[in-house]
Length: 303
Image (cartoon, rainbow, N blue to C red; front, side, top):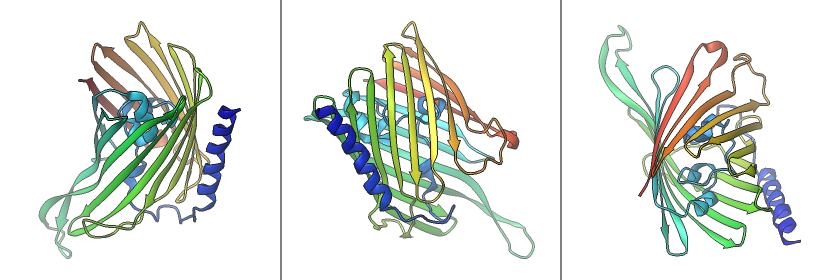
């Protein structure tokens, strides 16, 4: 009966937090770096990692997943986004006392040009960026039940304009049995404290997921997102491991709003290679009719 109680508790809490979200107009919220999926493994699986993430990158998808890592490891991920925009993140986890600590740095940046208003002459160059630092802690509460919390410090700069905010994530994981795991993450609950400039508005999100592990080689996962600045989305993906060295991955992210980018938009695929303490991950995501594909590469190491 206890496992069904925890399952109902996850659903109930998601309903409470979702009911408390006041919808914003699409695109009105800032801190868009908060909505970019962290690592190549999850990206290849359609970003369906709320219940599946179990390494240092879990501090983005669900901080409770850090408790499943239970080891010291670091991940570096780089992505070429649209046009000249780049995305870089670092995630670190290490056991501490009865739990696991996590540290992450996420940066969305591009090189911009300052021009004279009347003539258009180039006056100089500068960097636009949208960054955040995240500190996380997770622990096992009891058998099959884990909880985690993250503190985020957001910092933005556009030419001479600066803004920022501080926010909290709270996540939970519950294993119904050895093959089914449920996850819930309440993301970006703003504290309205800026350390860098004017207050940046943030989108809030409820992320709920389920992961299925039919055997030691296969993972299947499904996530549902309820952001307050856009329509809900559904993510589904899977991973199949071969010889404990190679992992093949694929996924799809479905936006409930009208898709204007063509039939390929939302699909993703990739692979992972593990050798000893090291791991290399790769993912690509086509942007449909835009004719553009993002490539995301990651490197991980246990130490």
